[in-house]
Length: 173
Length: 419
Image (cartoon, rainbow over all chains, first blue to last red; front, side, top):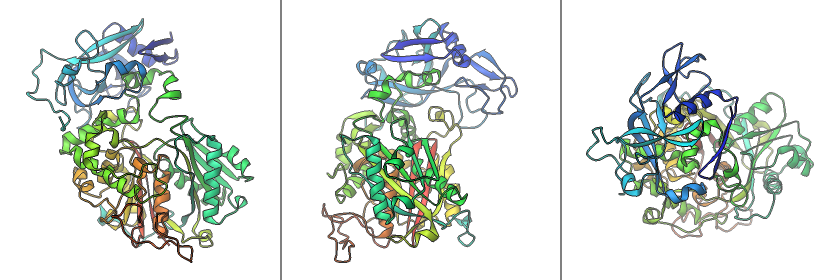
């Protein structure tokens, strides 16, 4: 069933034809991270899609994937565009390489999942937490509930993991 | 790679097409006009520049992101009966791509001469950054993996690529800020530039953050304006008002794996952009290489986009883009000045077309700076780049390149020559 809702002042709309995204976010709503696995070449794919980028296969199964990984790069927004995000600046948008299938099928390729850096409870990370995270930081996925059938993957520092002594941060700091 | 360039065997349509007219409106904030009115203004100027009557142009193309007028409206205003028109979706990287398609349309006999325009109220009507009208559009399922995180504007979307370049190669904020410094010096020689004031590297670093690693002055200006260029075959071009500017090669929206603007980050390296792939078409087809260029037009939506493209098109070794742009080479008086009009960072924002217009005028040796116009109607260029309000004509320009940017995974480019 289609989803039409609001989040931080933004209108979100998933058409009932968009079964790939409805399925993906439906799993997220159960706080369960699932990706498509291509039935032909057996590789996982992200984001949800109509065919496999590695072999053009169009038959997928859905499979639970561990929501852990490493920050590959990030942006840190100080001037928000969307009005609902202005009160949360500075907010971080990490790009996270999942541990699963990293470097496969080629070097420099990963299942790379964006999100916002949040507290373990799913709230936007305060500035002092943002300042502790950079390239190389270990993070784990948490979910932000939006509406029935839709939760958004987010990233929080993985306190149980071994963290780099000093994750790489923007050099002017 | 350059060793593989064969200058003797003509490839594709090398040298067979030319840009014969260029025109623009004023670069403004608050035009008080429709995009249709802006388009006719720019096209009238391009026709005048080419010495063509409206009836002598029978093709029209434009690009927009649901923020502009359409060719049939503009053509009917100007009394032009078209044999061909095409309005496509697109922003940066469209100018070069559409030039190639115009050549194809003419080659196929669909028309004889094409005017390509971009008209936008990029400040007062639809802002590219996503505020205003754009913010009201609902995010669909595919945007819930990106835009929903406040990863929305171009600067936000590209920031991870820029940051990763710093991480991979040690590129510094000060090195990249030299792009703005250089372009602001160029703009100080350009009466049309929206921002004519010179800024220093420190001014860039001291300006507030928009999205790390971008300071305010790393970002381009938003303006209201239209621009137009006229493309025709080389045999028709010889009858024009100006020295023709011939097209040696063109690359249109060449992609990295992943292609789509919101998916490119799946494929690495993140610090490599589409120019890495585009250069394998651009230089061999042109029969010349980066070292032959007299000046460059690397798209400066941000200081970083100009730097990363110059690097990936081979103007320096991979990873040394920061050194290259801070070496003085890209400044007027340097080996290969970039965006001598001041570019998007200073002159105005037209999704790449003003950068092509500038190179055309440079190739004619008649750029519109502050130098006095002589009795023959040509400017008497002083080549004084130090004094603001003087000259920005580069000496003896024979070859230029435009490096258009859509986003990290898509690029267009074009090599032009005088004559």
